[in-house]
Amino acid sequence: MIDNEPRGHLALDLVRVTEVAALAAAQFMGTGDKNAGDQAAVNAMRAALGVLVMDGKIITGEGEKDHAPMLYAGEIVGNGNPPEVDLAVDPVEGTNLLALGRGNAISVIALTRRGGMWDPGPSLYMKKLVVDKRARNVIDINESPAENLRRIAAALDRPVKKLTVFVLDKPRHANLIRQIRRVGARVSLQTDGDVAGALQAAIPGTGVDVLMGIGGTPEGIITAAAVKALGGELQAQCAPQSDAEAARVRAALGANWHTVLTADDLITADDAFFAATGITDGPLLEGVHFDRPGGVTTHSMVIRAKTGTIRYIKAIHQSQKMSRVRDGIWQT
Image (cartoon, rainbow, N blue to C red; front, side, top):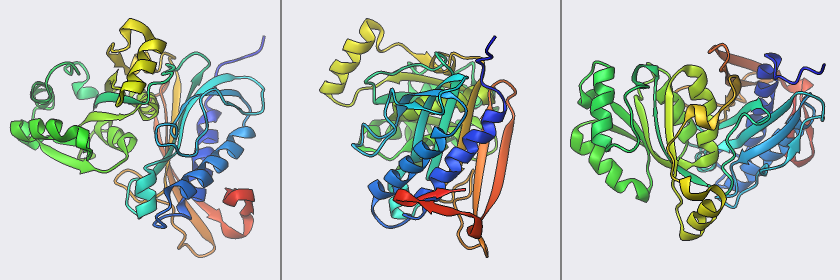
């Protein structure tokens, strides 16, 4: 009988995928051209996925909502052999961060067995609430920010004023930010990068206690794989940002399109893999560094839901053993 379950070795395979995407994208740091960096990372990730031993299907990928390069939903990747798997990808999470040379741009990917990942269809945006395992049983995305922050503070045995909330600095969050400040919590406003923000919220001791607000749906599904592995909690709801998106979501998902989804709803498989590599320096991962004599360094993390293990991987890629292939892809 053919064994169709993803195995542990896929964790390191996925790190190699995010590494090559990060290496390709990092060459465009600070150039002001977010699409060029994104395209290089997409090309690199597609090439790296193409040689993996798997029959993979992209369920969701960043790019559509920003009219940017992407690995598209439904694209088949891998060499066609078992196991059959589903993937959610974002070759550059934080394209603006990369283009402007700011921190916290990362390359990320999540993987489950086939059918183990929620298919968002045309949903591009979702409202999210993320905490670590200590507060997983107290949050309710339908409650007010103030009520959730009071519950989280009690779970963490800390006053609300000592909580830090990660929020994307977007016009849509003006009222959310006012509510957070009114209750006395601190706000970490970031222009982009809510996967990195969610990871910080889900890992104790990072300086971020909770993520709130509306971000991309692909990032939410990718985040769910990591949060599930970490034992934290993510709650989410589709949050269309235009009438056209709302109509598409209602048509695809039906009357229950606004249902609250948890990490277990977004990642239904018992086992899931998450991998990320830093492109620019951030609080969790260092970026790609070209300054090591004779080599380039990358810093990655990989998490597996089955074991809950977090591995951090520092790799030195020897320049003389790296070759450049078409479209600026690094092959290692």
